[in-house]
Length: 279
Image 1: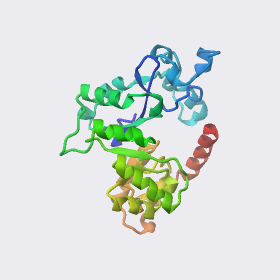
Image 2: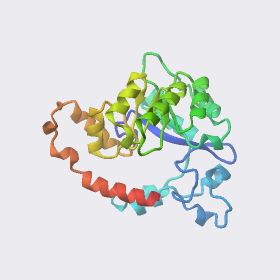
Image 3: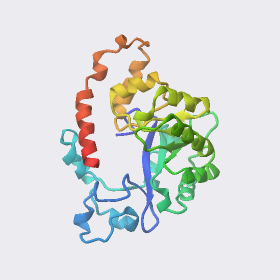
Image 4: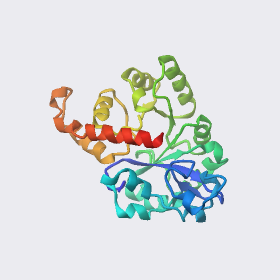
């Protein structure tokens, strides 16, 4: 679905199993998004790092989505299993598909040496960078130390420092930019922080800005005016459609049709539900 959506990069969270396999999974804990408590009742810990790949293969990874978002449910989602990074590299090889990979190192402090393992798998698959082409791989992390290691292991692939705060003072923002300059090429703030003066401050230092998670059409419109360099989103089709429209519109807000905001009420309700689920 991601390959067919029109995105430039597919974002993946990389973690490591108890038996040393690199896998793709968002949470460090399995309880929210799988049936681990039913398949393995009485486990002392449901942290992913305490499960082998064989154990993880026994879990259901899509049923939660069908329950939470019935309007977008599919039977096939209840048949999903976990993927290894190697399987992803073979399926979504940027050399063959033209679609890049944005690899987020999820809580890398839990997995010593994971940076080198990821870089080695990319090299084994011959996914390298070409000077005359856009980057095939981005690295993302909330960990400056992890990004620093990646800058030494694979300096040609851009790195993005992610930030968690919903609001930050101008002074704190400058502090984040100081750190970003040391370890990364760009910064990924939460959308609310992507004010034009903050984006402009990053650009003055030669850093790009990728706000996340931008799931509403009004956010795309506003941040395009603020000169964001790209977006991290759960709704790639909306983003692709928006970019097609942007090329046809001028700066006058009146030139944007009402249809660009037509799903905002539904999206707002959906985001509220997602927030409740996350809490």
